[in-house]
Image 1: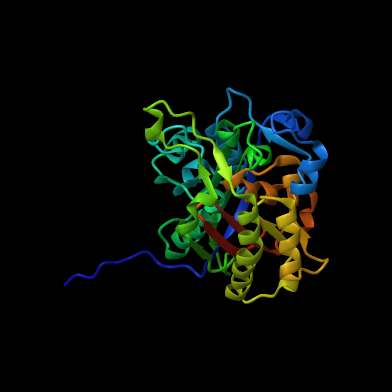
Image 2: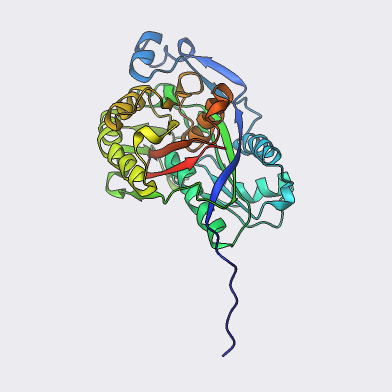
Length: 331
């Protein structure tokens, strides 16, 4: 029987570059406190958010994704035609089909690269990196574009006190390519669908046919906080173990930008030394779900370019409840 000749596997993959796009509108806490009967001080104390960025009415999540992708591809020293696959993590696509990834691929000139969306909310970027790593290491692709893109302002109920004041708009993109040494560790990822009501939409699309209101996001804040701090700290420690490193080996910690209190408690649970830079992009960007980790990475590297080449622990967690974490070499 004739054997099938497969593509040659590689020693590893790594993130080659990162790009970012943030909403064009800066929204301070004072603009949101009226409908939720709150204050700037209350929001800062509970979340660490001072402002968040949101996109104008005519700017969609795919527009943000395009801007971030073009920067990432340019910084990788590539042409869009060299992108072998496009993965977009989003819960902001305005239609069930076609995928945002397919539209993005056409816009940036990466056609006919395979393209698909991931619906894993705040863990979506980590899921995308896990899949890009597998594609590159297996030899199925040379370069994979991974994008987290959200316009969460479109699913905000301004009177909701559980999550509405957290949310922002933006996109972050990375190019994953081959490496002689592993630059992305084995991912620790999973889900617990039994707790789907913890972070959820208020209505289904089908219910809208019967006159239900536009679906918006809700969360059980206390349950999410406890789950993130205690259970996700365990996941983060497992990711360090999979990478064969200790917290003291890290140059940076880049968690999903859900809440500043969660980030600070994470740091305590992981016993991160002062030498580890901690991404706190949430203070001025807000919670951008799938976009938050690459956006935070982009800002951290802009502010601390000497971190390039160091190790970073990144972890995403959120609706589903889903989670994903890996240790990566910073571009």
